[in-house]
Amino acid sequence: MKGYRISVIRHGMTEANENGIYIGKTDLPLSPKGAADLAAKMDEFDYPSVHRVYTSPLLRCRETADILFPETEIVPVDDFRELDLGEFEGKTVDELLKRDDYKAWLKGGKDVRPPKGESLEEMTARTYTGLHNVIMDMMESGLTHCALITHAGIISNMLAGFGLPKYSPSQINTEPGGGFDILVTAQMWLNSQSFEILGYCPYDRIDDMNE
Image (cartoon, rainbow, N blue to C red):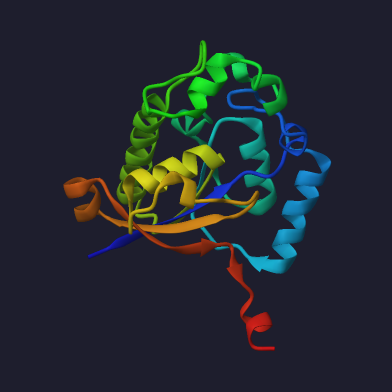
Protein backbone atom coordinates (compact mmCIF):
# COMPACT_ATOMS: atom_id res chain seq x y z
CA MET A 1 0.00 0.00 0.00
CA LYS A 2 1.30 3.43 -0.95
CA GLY A 3 2.78 5.49 1.86
CA TYR A 4 3.00 9.26 2.17
CA ARG A 5 5.92 10.76 4.08
CA ILE A 6 5.81 14.18 5.75
CA SER A 7 8.88 15.82 7.29
CA VAL A 8 7.45 17.90 10.15
CA ILE A 9 9.93 20.65 11.10
CA ARG A 10 9.93 23.42 13.67
CA HIS A 11 10.63 26.99 12.54
CA GLY A 12 13.86 28.81 13.39
CA MET A 13 14.35 31.09 16.39
CA THR A 14 12.87 34.55 16.80
CA GLU A 15 14.09 37.28 19.16
CA ALA A 16 11.16 36.45 21.45
CA ASN A 17 12.28 32.80 21.63
CA GLU A 18 15.80 33.92 22.48
CA ASN A 19 14.53 36.20 25.25
CA GLY A 20 12.09 33.73 26.82
CA ILE A 21 8.98 35.62 25.72
CA TYR A 22 5.74 33.78 24.96
CA ILE A 23 4.58 34.16 21.37
CA GLY A 24 1.76 32.24 19.76
CA LYS A 25 -0.22 34.09 17.12
CA THR A 26 2.20 37.07 17.29
CA ASP A 27 3.70 37.27 13.81
CA LEU A 28 7.42 37.79 14.33
CA PRO A 29 10.17 37.14 11.76
CA LEU A 30 13.21 34.97 12.35
CA SER A 31 16.00 36.67 14.24
CA PRO A 32 19.36 37.11 12.48
CA LYS A 33 20.74 34.37 14.74
CA GLY A 34 17.76 32.15 13.98
CA ALA A 35 18.30 32.46 10.23
CA ALA A 36 22.06 31.88 10.62
CA ASP A 37 21.46 28.78 12.75
CA LEU A 38 19.21 27.31 10.05
CA ALA A 39 21.88 27.90 7.41
CA ALA A 40 24.42 26.18 9.68
CA LYS A 41 22.09 23.20 10.08
CA MET A 42 21.92 22.86 6.31
CA ASP A 43 25.72 22.59 6.24
CA GLU A 44 25.75 19.99 9.00
CA PHE A 45 22.73 17.84 8.16
CA ASP A 46 20.81 16.62 5.12
CA TYR A 47 17.28 17.92 4.67
CA PRO A 48 15.04 15.84 2.39
CA SER A 49 14.12 16.66 -1.17
CA VAL A 50 10.36 17.22 -1.05
CA HIS A 51 7.64 17.90 -3.59
CA ARG A 52 5.89 20.66 -1.66
CA VAL A 53 6.24 22.56 1.62
CA TYR A 54 3.15 23.23 3.71
CA THR A 55 3.64 25.90 6.38
CA SER A 56 1.97 27.75 9.18
CA PRO A 57 0.90 31.14 7.77
CA LEU A 58 3.11 32.94 10.32
CA LEU A 59 6.20 34.71 9.00
CA ARG A 60 8.74 32.76 11.04
CA CYS A 61 7.56 29.52 9.41
CA ARG A 62 7.44 30.91 5.88
CA GLU A 63 10.94 32.34 6.27
CA THR A 64 12.17 28.98 7.55
CA ALA A 65 10.68 27.28 4.49
CA ASP A 66 12.43 29.79 2.20
CA ILE A 67 15.79 28.97 3.82
CA LEU A 68 15.49 25.19 4.06
CA PHE A 69 13.60 24.55 0.81
CA PRO A 70 14.40 27.53 -1.45
CA GLU A 71 13.36 25.91 -4.74
CA THR A 72 10.16 24.26 -3.52
CA GLU A 73 6.53 25.36 -3.74
CA ILE A 74 5.28 26.75 -0.41
CA VAL A 75 1.62 26.43 0.59
CA PRO A 76 0.50 28.20 3.82
CA VAL A 77 -2.14 26.34 5.86
CA ASP A 78 -3.93 28.46 8.46
CA ASP A 79 -4.75 25.52 10.74
CA PHE A 80 -1.04 25.02 11.52
CA ARG A 81 -0.60 28.42 13.21
CA GLU A 82 0.66 28.34 16.81
CA LEU A 83 -1.60 28.33 19.87
CA ASP A 84 -3.28 31.68 20.54
CA LEU A 85 -1.95 32.61 23.99
CA GLY A 86 -4.35 35.51 24.48
CA GLU A 87 -3.27 37.80 27.34
CA PHE A 88 -0.09 35.74 27.86
CA GLU A 89 1.30 36.83 24.47
CA GLY A 90 4.44 38.93 24.64
CA LYS A 91 5.14 38.23 28.33
CA THR A 92 7.93 36.34 30.08
CA VAL A 93 7.48 33.51 32.57
CA ASP A 94 8.66 35.79 35.38
CA GLU A 95 5.93 38.31 34.52
CA LEU A 96 3.25 35.65 34.28
CA LEU A 97 4.11 33.86 37.52
CA LYS A 98 2.47 36.77 39.33
CA ARG A 99 -0.89 35.82 37.76
CA ASP A 100 -3.25 33.20 39.18
CA ASP A 101 -4.78 32.52 35.75
CA TYR A 102 -1.33 31.63 34.41
CA LYS A 103 -0.72 29.20 37.29
CA ALA A 104 -4.11 27.60 36.62
CA TRP A 105 -3.26 27.27 32.91
CA LEU A 106 0.05 25.57 33.72
CA LYS A 107 -1.76 22.91 35.74
CA GLY A 108 -3.22 21.73 32.48
CA GLY A 109 -6.40 20.35 31.10
CA LYS A 110 -7.12 20.35 27.39
CA ASP A 111 -10.10 22.65 27.80
CA VAL A 112 -8.22 25.30 29.84
CA ARG A 113 -7.37 28.42 27.88
CA PRO A 114 -5.44 31.61 28.55
CA PRO A 115 -7.66 34.68 28.94
CA LYS A 116 -8.88 35.63 25.44
CA GLY A 117 -6.80 32.73 24.06
CA GLU A 118 -7.24 29.20 22.76
CA SER A 119 -7.38 25.83 24.52
CA LEU A 120 -5.25 22.81 23.59
CA GLU A 121 -8.48 21.02 22.67
CA GLU A 122 -9.30 23.73 20.13
CA MET A 123 -5.75 23.71 18.75
CA THR A 124 -5.74 19.91 18.40
CA ALA A 125 -9.05 19.99 16.54
CA ARG A 126 -7.80 22.46 13.94
CA THR A 127 -4.46 20.63 13.70
CA TYR A 128 -6.40 17.49 12.78
CA THR A 129 -8.30 19.44 10.11
CA GLY A 130 -5.08 20.86 8.68
CA LEU A 131 -3.34 17.49 8.65
CA HIS A 132 -6.34 15.79 7.05
CA ASN A 133 -6.42 18.39 4.28
CA VAL A 134 -2.66 18.04 3.68
CA ILE A 135 -2.85 14.25 3.50
CA MET A 136 -5.81 14.39 1.11
CA ASP A 137 -3.99 16.97 -1.03
CA MET A 138 -0.87 14.78 -1.20
CA MET A 139 -2.91 11.73 -2.18
CA GLU A 140 -4.89 13.59 -4.84
CA SER A 141 -1.72 15.19 -6.25
CA GLY A 142 0.38 12.02 -6.07
CA LEU A 143 3.00 13.67 -3.82
CA THR A 144 4.83 11.01 -1.82
CA HIS A 145 7.11 13.24 0.30
CA CYS A 146 6.35 16.76 1.51
CA ALA A 147 7.50 18.97 4.38
CA LEU A 148 5.45 20.79 7.01
CA ILE A 149 7.00 23.81 8.75
CA THR A 150 5.13 24.68 11.92
CA HIS A 151 5.50 25.35 15.66
CA ALA A 152 6.77 23.31 18.61
CA GLY A 153 3.35 23.15 20.28
CA ILE A 154 1.65 22.01 17.09
CA ILE A 155 4.29 19.32 16.52
CA SER A 156 4.24 17.86 20.03
CA ASN A 157 0.44 17.72 20.24
CA MET A 158 0.02 16.40 16.70
CA LEU A 159 2.52 13.56 17.18
CA ALA A 160 1.16 12.73 20.63
CA GLY A 161 -2.44 12.80 19.41
CA PHE A 162 -2.16 10.90 16.13
CA GLY A 163 1.29 9.29 16.02
CA LEU A 164 2.34 5.68 16.60
CA PRO A 165 4.05 4.62 18.81
CA LYS A 166 2.29 6.68 21.46
CA TYR A 167 4.11 9.43 23.35
CA SER A 168 2.96 12.21 25.65
CA PRO A 169 3.46 15.78 24.38
CA SER A 170 6.16 16.36 27.02
CA GLN A 171 8.24 13.54 25.51
CA ILE A 172 8.33 15.18 22.07
CA ASN A 173 10.86 17.99 21.90
CA THR A 174 11.91 19.74 18.72
CA GLU A 175 14.83 22.08 18.28
CA PRO A 176 14.54 25.00 15.84
CA GLY A 177 15.03 23.58 12.35
CA GLY A 178 14.51 20.02 13.60
CA GLY A 179 11.60 17.63 13.72
CA PHE A 180 10.35 14.21 12.73
CA ASP A 181 9.46 12.18 9.67
CA ILE A 182 6.01 10.61 9.73
CA LEU A 183 4.49 8.06 7.35
CA VAL A 184 0.80 7.65 6.66
CA THR A 185 -1.25 5.40 4.39
CA ALA A 186 -4.82 5.95 3.27
CA GLN A 187 -5.95 2.96 5.34
CA MET A 188 -4.21 4.16 8.53
CA TRP A 189 -5.58 7.67 8.27
CA LEU A 190 -9.13 6.95 7.16
CA ASN A 191 -9.62 4.00 9.53
CA SER A 192 -7.87 5.21 12.68
CA GLN A 193 -6.68 8.81 12.10
CA SER A 194 -3.10 7.74 12.83
CA PHE A 195 0.36 7.78 11.29
CA GLU A 196 3.71 6.15 12.01
CA ILE A 197 6.54 8.20 13.57
CA LEU A 198 9.65 7.13 11.64
CA GLY A 199 12.45 9.13 13.29
CA TYR A 200 14.25 12.44 13.39
CA CYS A 201 14.63 14.98 10.61
CA PRO A 202 16.99 16.36 9.27
CA TYR A 203 19.31 13.41 8.75
CA ASP A 204 22.91 12.79 9.71
CA ARG A 205 25.26 13.04 6.76
CA ILE A 206 26.13 9.58 5.46
CA ASP A 207 29.70 10.73 4.71
CA ASP A 208 30.10 11.86 8.33
CA MET A 209 28.82 8.52 9.66
CA ASN A 210 31.39 6.62 7.60
CA GLU A 211 34.37 8.65 8.81
